[in-house]
Image 1: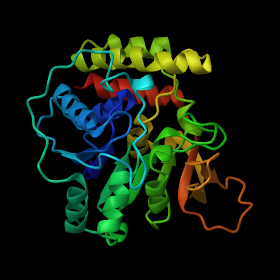
Image 2: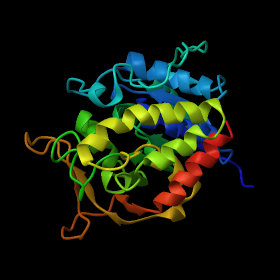
Image 3: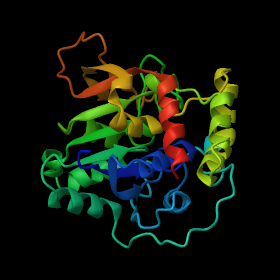
Length: 313
């Protein structure tokens, strides 16, 4: 087996973030160097707490969790308690974690870790607003050349937005940060709503987690029981989209996804379309490609991977 891929998970847990973290920690192909928390789904005070809760649930109190940005680069924070509940992890009852957050700031951890690594060694898995990543690029632009890749969940084009008609939540919360990342020259893989809306956590799939017979499977089912209610009502589907785990599964089995390299620009000034990911899918502009934009997946295989990994915890 090749050496595990070194990753930093930048996240704002969030039920779907929690599932992504569990899958990453259950996968020997991935070496999680640290988890950096950012404000997003709920304020930073809760996202860093939730990250620690999930590490302990996975039996990995050895994972270092770092607190990052508490607000976007130059906007007021927008949160999503209406989706994720007051705690961000509403659904199961999880104990207060014994493990502590690290004293080092998340941005400093990202810069220090990437700069100390060999070029092309570390991948950032971005599951929330891109504030921490943008701040790291501003602090040390050289990390753009040292990173292997950023794989992120964010944006949407054919599916429109989920927080405004034009914008997906992670990009909308901090569009200026997203613009910095998309213009950084770093190899980018983007998991937009266009693909995550095809990964529906149906009742059968949620029950498969519950029947795994371990605590992580039971908690995953309880997280999704709560999380999916909002989207089931919104979209009228059997199960809502499961967004963030796509970032991790892409690293494990990229062949279950398809998309194309295109240009994506971030709208930062329009009142109507703020946070829109303007994806040149049909290549009608002369703008240069800056990301691999994923559009389809084998959803059956996606959920097989999730259940198989969470069963290991």
